Amino acid sequence: MRKFDTKVQYLKYKVLREIAKEAWNETLLDNILEIPKKIVPGNTPTMRCCVYKERAILEERVKVAMGGDKSNPNVIQVLPIACDECPVGGFEVTNACRGCLAHRCEDVCKMGAISFDRDHVAHIDKSKCVECGACAKVCPYTAIVSHKRPCQNACKVKAISMDENKAAKIDNNKCIACGACVYQCPFGAIMDKSYIINVVDLLKKSSQGKNYKLYAVVAPSVSSQFTYAKLGQVVTGLKVLGFHTVVEAALGADMVAQAESKELAEKGFLTSSCCPAFVSYIEKNFPDMRQFVSHNLSPMATISKYIKDTTENAKVIFIGPCTAKKAEVQKSSVKPYVDAVLTFEELQALFDSRDIDITTLEEGVLDNASYFGRIFARCGGLADAVAEGLKEQGLDDFELKACSCDGIEECRIALLKKSKNLTDVNFIEGMACVGGCIGGAGCLTHGTKDKAEVDKYGREALEKTIADAVSMLK
Image 1: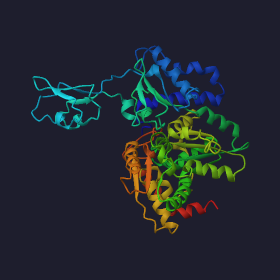
Image 2: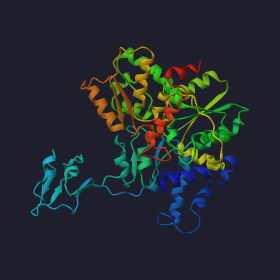
Image 3: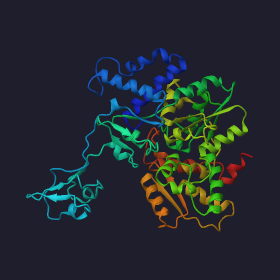
Image 4: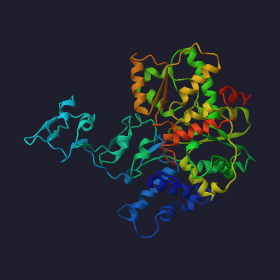
């Protein structure tokens, strides 16, 4: 079964795998310049004009995979040399326009940007067009198309524009590090910075737990990943890599659900704090709403804090689908508890850098969390868990009116309505990625059955209530 959705992901993986191999062997500095040649050997180009450009781009990929531009605080970075200068032009009328009588495009355009020539063919006045796309939606011939770049189309916070060379550039003041552009760019010209060599270093220095205990905190969305193997084999694979213990981030989700439901009942209105990209979106676009963001740490940080508070000389690596987690761990409120972040893509590269075929391993056990903690991985799961938290703590008198936002566009609408008192919603669950964490940019694959896999994983939990799961910590 395939490990990745696209060839772009596979290319990224090969770079990460080679870097990890060299890091394990302590030969990275000696062989760093050879990595592009290993990936693109010979003289025949595979996707660009020549092998020299391919290798030049790979050199930039290697840099980002080793932590990227240190002067740029953003964990998302553009590779200008890889940007193929996609056409820019907004909405245009194609020759599919039949000059029909209906003129629905004109009727729906509130800006008066549509006009017609003597053959009744539609034309768009770019000086008036606001690129809302209404005309394209109503055209019966689909004769109006958008030439918006894939990265710009993916970025719902409008953080991407073009520089003077027509290469993509990111406005850090708008970017929320969700990684949508990373996944959607067909040329892989935007990457998330990797800290895989930091993780290799932590694994090596732990000496299989002799110097310190290295914990792997794994996001519940892992249930929809590594579909070619069993989840228990992933757990065993992590221990073969050198992790002392594998812990479910979903247990942190149980802790958050219990605390957040209580906080909600006390305050009357909250927005969730689990998705760092959503929290960043509020901070940058709805500063007056910051006071309503839950004061609880995210599940990742919550369980990591518990591990460090209760285990002497412990270090924690979070493994999940999220590029924004790489930004979250840089915050002063989180940094003491999480030592590094890996995506599922990077974990696959780490396995293969050590020639670990997880399909041959026995199944380990991962049984820390409840059903409700595990379903945090999909949109609506957090709201369901908060409802359960209210119920279990006898806070039934509080009437939960939750709004589960599937993607940053729905988040924007919900926050806008609430900021103008146009809704009586008292809890906003914000998920920046469509589908929730299972739609994260760091996932190996994105499938239609991912939500069902998360729910199945939840039903397999030994602990049936949030209270049962949290009580195991005491």
